[in-house]
Image 1: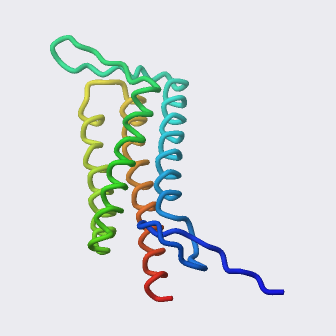
Image 2: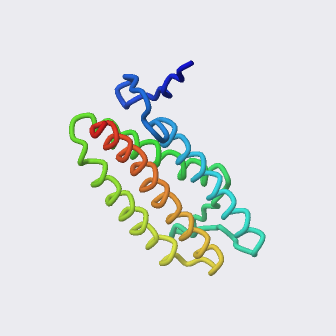
Length: 155
């Protein structure tokens, strides 16, 4: 009685036997879902701690950070950035490492917005944390794809 090796899919959809880890779509989907849920948890914790989550845009206009806004600003950048990197990796695999660096730098650079805004400290800290979470998620998800691609070329 022989066991058949597990099947997995590459970014192009081809099946390769025995490749470990998550596929590209599983890694990207998991990163988007976990990022969204984690950021919603931060929003909930921030509200419980007394954060206003009302951002003064200048000119007397105030925008409230809602769960829908958090979900959109969590999932969409992950899906777009991850998807772009995976598609470009079909041509140049080195783009995955570059995309990890770019994703992390962009996530950390955007912390400047909440830190410099005129809001309460709880809101500043919560929004800053919400900017770090996608950076961690994109680095992780792209590393999963990169390692999977490396294991495919060495097998």
